[in-house]
Length: 196
Image 1 (cartoon, rainbow, N blue to C red):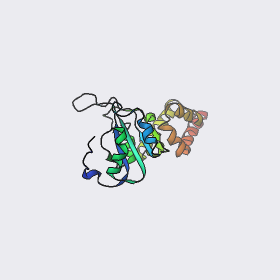
Image 2: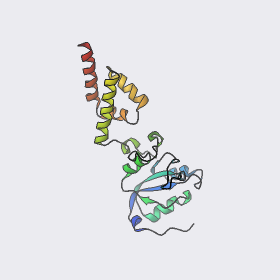
Image 3: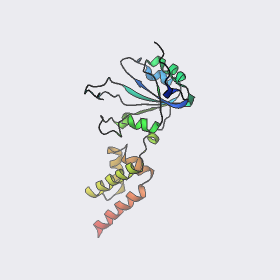
Image 4: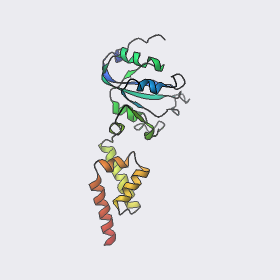
């Protein structure tokens, strides 16, 4: 396999790189090959419903984020991925944005993939990378308050149980991390109003 020429974009040394793995050309044990290097990395769900601009379906593929412990050159990463038989690596400017892209979270016009199928390897804290920004948190809190009103929820446990069973990836982290007081007080107010 001829080595692609180094592009100016990839001439910088950086810790975070991305590759695309095509299941039909990668070895079956491609995940083991990466795991054997003992690095942190993230694997997208299989993108098997992406559409080309001409309307045809793209070749099924995985997006992979490689998080090295130290900076790597383009050549070092190219050597690292050679056994995977995948296209050239690209440096990652923002790991969080790439992980969100793995499910097309910020691209409503693209096929939406299940966030729970994003796989963290080597100890990556996937929830930290998927953490909602402020405007997303406010939108989710509004959804929960609407749910509380619509279903007349008057016990905090009912909200938490529902979030665990039905919204583990979006509602539950917000309840668990920072908004217990607001939601609990809102539910108490609903309960108090019923008594009045």
